[in-house]
Length: 163
Image (cartoon, rainbow, N blue to C red; front, side):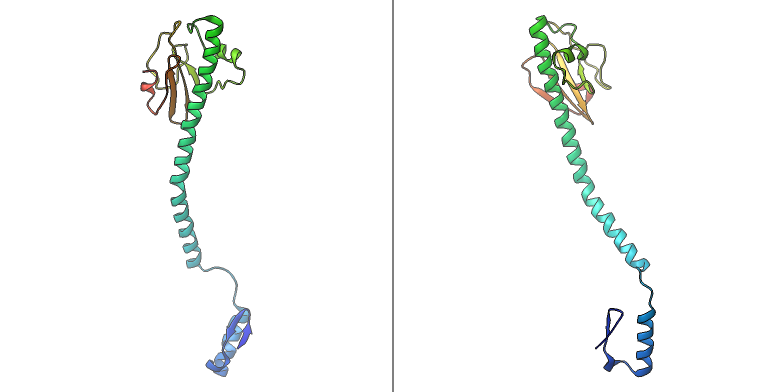
């Protein structure tokens, strides 16, 4: 066996003239990838991305749903503090709730019927001593609580919020 440029050549199977030609070609061959090799590598990358993208999108959607629910719970806690101070939910706004809970997220959190509603939310709830609706949005998810002690509900339809 003869080693030339990292390739092995069996001297017994190649004639003298052909051996010189093969050795010369191996010694002077340019390095790099062929077009076919590059196309196959690109196809493999496309296949891997097409397999990973749906999982990533599902992960992101689940994270948005959890974020909306967590933010709605934070607004509900602040609403409880507001009620303790005022003995009513009437007139409650996110800006006022922020004074009761300084860590309250004001982006994407809402008190229904307080003047500023999220896009798609059409239902209005009258706020009084025992009724309110607070909600939060993240991505395509809405999470809301209708009245103190009510369950936290998540939905992707804005018209269903506070109903």
